[in-house]
Length: 280
Image (cartoon, rainbow, N blue to C red; front, side, top):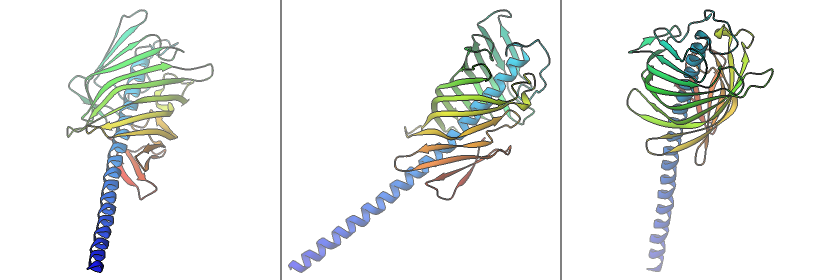
């Protein structure tokens, strides 16, 4: 009888170990999938933020409020297309800029936008210490709704052109209604095109910093720039650099590529085979 009891106990222990092991594997896989999803969400959020930057810079140059320029035609018209840009007051700062895409149009670089971007600017965009606060009014990019407050602070010193960009209460809603929240700080340095201020097509920016992203269920991942992101104005998306996305007991790496202009990135967890995602 004692032997039988021991056998039963051993079987129960083995079952419990097996059950707990399977449960942990299932929980790990669930966490991995959450990390994959939030990594893709962050990649999209980053690209939509860079797109807002492109629109802002083009409008500033077109309206001669970028800094130290005489009014001349912008040598590139990538983003504004059907947009109406109004600046008030005409003289002095602060200025309010409204970039209105109306019911929507597709720009020269193939991106569809509708709604309004509102910006309050304290001084010329490229002047040291200037600040621009951007908000959105029913604004969509390729059917992704963009919300939140983006604050650009010019941190340039002689010989450089740079900004700190703070995202607060960022929210992206996908075309299927799913949404995610994002916030953080990024430092943006212009690495090419400084000497050709009217030609935006040769502008290249290097981006570093930290961020966080959360889904509707409250799951959150913290993101650090592992290798500086690169955004060329001539490219619709971030084309180079890596992000590290920290999970509970693992991490993912988002790789934006080798500098080729495309709309793809890859995500891998703990060095496992990567998945390819479409940025927008």
